[in-house]
Image 1 (cartoon, rainbow, N blue to C red):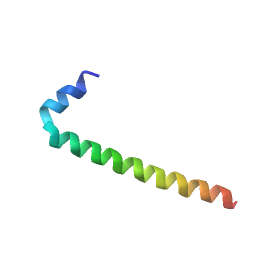
Image 2 (cartoon, rainbow, N blue to C red):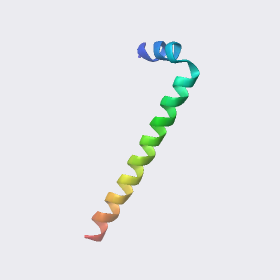
Image 3 (cartoon, helix red, strand yellow):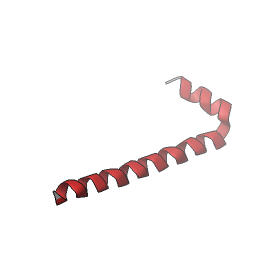
Image 4 (cartoon, rainbow, N blue to C red):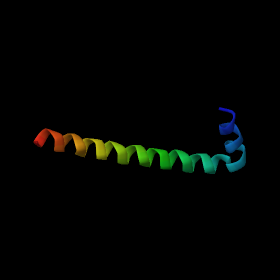
Length: 44
């Protein structure tokens, strides 16, 4: 857990914002994929 503060110091707030944005993007993609998978299973 000590790695994160070091990364924040290295990258700055811009780097943190970029990581948060990409994390949110991945989470959204996974959610869409999960919903699609669920609808496929319901149709069978």
